[in-house]
Amino acid sequence: MPETKLQDFIYTLIMAFVMVYVMICYNIAIHTGGLNNFVFLEAFNELIYMWPIAIILEFFFINKIAHKLTFKALDPKKTPNIIISYGISIIIVTFMCPIMSLIATILINKPSLDLFISSWLQSMVLSFPMAMCFQLFYAGPIVRFIFNLFKNKLSKKA
Image 1 (cartoon, rainbow, N blue to C red):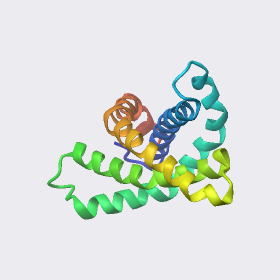
Image 2 (cartoon, rainbow, N blue to C red):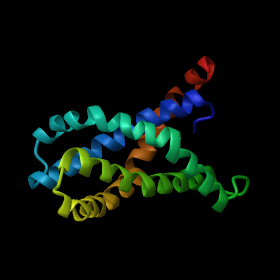
Image 3 (spheres, one colour):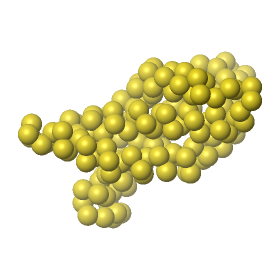
């Protein structure tokens, strides 16, 4: 996993891109009644501003909280690294999903004031299981694999 600030930033860039893109595709598919080919291109319109928001939130705020809470619950000396990675991932999704759902509700869904809370809650409830499962079973392992391919090169530059 990341050992330097540069590595942490690169890892966050990759993970945020993967998670944000997939979650945008998922939410567009929900709103349009199913997954169609146009969803994959349409998602890039929202990715332009949702990806930087996710990077800022995760890198500067949520990542620190996730590490602090994980290491409160798990002893890094006695716990396998993969369990620590899962713990961090679970906490990140637990915080990021409601926040990103709120931002998407404000910027994309734009419900009327009387429907704002219900729109946000619905978005969060529909997104959370997908975000958690995708993070733990797909994005996490894939991004860790990709990151580890380039980790040594990043160490030499850092």
